[in-house]
Image 1 (tube, rainbow, N blue to C red):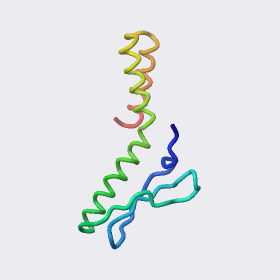
Image 2 (cartoon, rainbow, N blue to C red):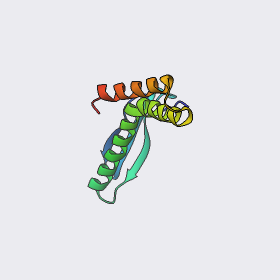
Image 3 (cartoon, helix red, strand yellow):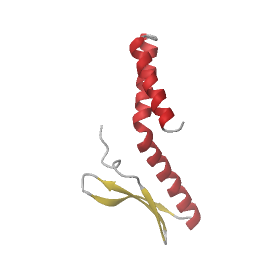
Length: 101
């Protein structure tokens, strides 16, 4: 399933009442507020907003390798270690190494 909100990194912008999470929405072709965090104090809202944005952006960046790792592990569990599942696992390991993990 394709998300309409994952083609660009999200960002967090402070407002006088909290902060807004902004994402590029492919369906509309523009940046839009997708969530608003109301402040109990400005620092808390901004900190929570930054945390959410960081999680979303990390998931976008690493989603492909997470999916590949899941599929490789699932293959090993279903089929055992064979040439095909070993190759799938090797590709995941090489991708992780290139990304500095």
